Image 1 (cartoon, rainbow, N blue to C red):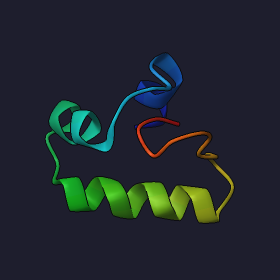
Image 2 (image 1 turned 135 degrees about the vertical axis):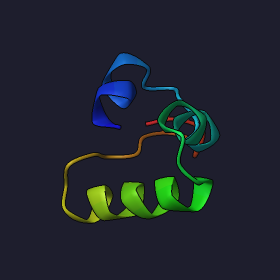
Image 3 (image 1 turned 60 degrees about the vertical axis):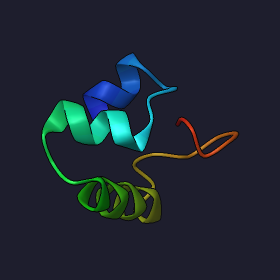
Amino acid sequence: MIDLIKKRPDITTKELANSLKISYERVEYNLAEMQKSGVINREGSKKGF
C-alpha cells in the first residue's frame, strides 16, 4: 500500500482497494492506522496522500 501511495500520491482509497484486491473499508482502516502511527500524512483534500 505504501509503495502505491509513493508512486501515486494522488491515488484514491477506491483505487487502492482495487489495486490491492481488498475492501474499501480495509483500506480506510489501514490508512487510519498508518496515519496514527505517523507512517503517512494526508495532505490537501481527501482524494490523495
